[in-house]
Length: 434
Ligand code: UDX
Ligand code: UDX
Ligand code: ADP
Picture 1 (cartoon, protein in one colour):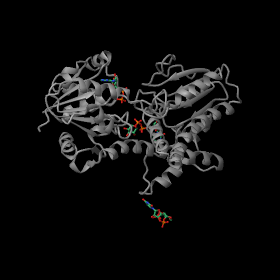
Picture 2 (cartoon, rainbow, N blue to C red; picture 1 turned 120 degrees about the horizontal axis):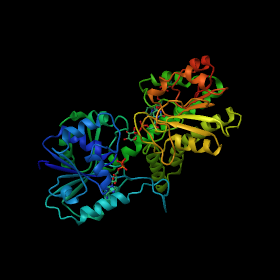
Picture 3 (cartoon, helix red, strand yellow; picture 1 turned 120 degrees about the vertical axis):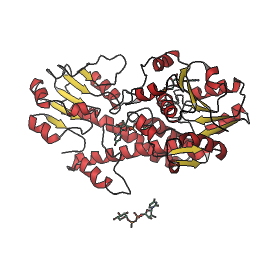
Picture 4 (cartoon, protein in one colour; picture 1 turned 135 degrees about the horizontal axis):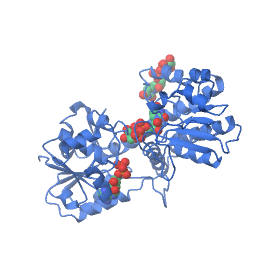
C-alpha cells in the first residue's frame, strides 16, 4: 500500500510540530491535523501558534495550504486516510481509581469512538503517538473490532524547546506492532531519518519504552539532586561531581544538571504512570524504587523553599522578591508542573511581594513584569527558577545597587557564578555548591 494521506488527532504540543515537520519531509503525502477545539485550529491557521518552538513557523509556512491542513472537520481528516496518529492529551487521571497517578485516556477513548463510527473505505493504520498506559493497544482493538484497522505504537520523544530539532534528527524512532504495517509507517520516517535509527519492537515494548525513557530521565535528575543535598552538607561542588561522573562514557554527561526539581507535563506524569503500573502488578519493591525518584523531586522543591525562607530569617512579609523564570525549563513558554508554581505559592503564603518575569512563560491569574525594567528596584531577593540565557546576561552589579540590603540571590539552576555574585555583595545560595 502506498501511503497517500495521514491524519492526526490533536493539534497540541505533539501533533502540531510533528505533523509540520513530517509534511515538510514527505511532500508526496497529505497531512490533516484534526482537533475538536476550533480555537486551537484557528491559532494554527492564523499564525498564532499555540506552541512556542524555534523554527516552527518556518515548517508551517513551507507546508500549510500545500500538504498540511489544520481542521475541525473529521470527515476531511478520516476520508481515504491511510495512517491516523493519536496525539491527544493523556493527563494524569484526576478521579477514582488511580487518581493522581494513572493516565486519563478519555480523550483517546473519544477519538476511538469517532473512528469506530466512521465508515472507513480502506485499511487504516492507527498509531498511538501520545503516551498511553501499557496495553492500550489491546483496549483499542477490543473497542474497534475491525480487522481493517491495525494499531501500532510509535511514541514521541520530542522535548519542548528543541521540538523541531528532535523531530528532524531523533536519536531513534520506535515502532511497535505487526511488522507489515510497521514497515509502512517506517516508510514515512525513512524519507528523512536513517534506517538504522528506526527500531521495530513488539507493541507492548514500544508503549513501555516511552514511560521508561521519561522515568530514567527523571531518575537522573533526582539522582544528581540527591547528590547536591550531600554536597551542601560537606562542601563538595555538585557541578564538579556532574563533570567527574558524567565523563564516564558508561554514565554519560547529559541530564546531570542539578535543579530546583524537574517539571513539565511528561516526566512526573510518566514516572507516576510507571509507579502505578508496578503497583497494579503488585510489584511493591519496584514501585518503591521509582516512587523515591518522585519523592526526591518533591523534597528538592521543598528544600529550596525552606532555604529561601530560613535564609531570610523567616521574615518575608512585605519584602520584594524578584522571581526570574516560570517556564519549567528554558526555551519554552510551558509552565506545567514547573517548580516555580509551588515556589511562588509558598512565597505568597509568606506574604512576600512578588515581581515575576519570564521571557515566554505566563502563569494564569498572576500579574507578571513584561521586561526586567525596574524589577530590581528595592527588592530584597532574586530567585532564579528557569535557566534562560537572558538571566546570565543581567548586569547584577547594577541590580545589586538598586536592591535593598542585604541582597539575596537564590539560584535554583546554578546559573550564575557564585564567586562573582558574592564578590558583588550578594548573599548567594546555589544548589550543592560552596
Ligand atoms: C566497577 C566499576 O565499573 C569500575 O569503574 C570501578 O573502578 C570498580 O567497580 P567492576 O566491579 O569490575 O567495576 O564491574 P562492572 O563492570 O562495573 O560490573 C559490576 C556488576 O554489575 C557486575 O556484576 C555486572 O555483571 C553488573 N552489570 C553491569 C549488570 O548487571 N548490568 C549492566 O548493564 C552492567
Ligand atoms: C521530556 C523528554 O525529554 C522527552 O523526550 C519526552 O518526549 C517529553 O518529556 P520535556 O518535558 O520537554 O521532555 O523536558 P526535558 O528536557 O526532559 O526536561 C524536563 C525537566 O527536567 C525540566 O524541568 C528540566 O529543567 C529538568 N532537568 C533536565 C533538570 O533539572 N536537569 C537536567 O539535567 C535536565
Ligand atoms: P500534547 O502535549 O499531548 O500534545 P496538548 O494538550 O498540547 O497535548 O494537545 C492535545 C490536543 O488534543 C488539544 O488541542 C485537544 O483539543 C485535542 N483533543 C482532545 N480530544 C480530542 C479528540 N477527541 N479529537 C481531536 N482532538 C482532541
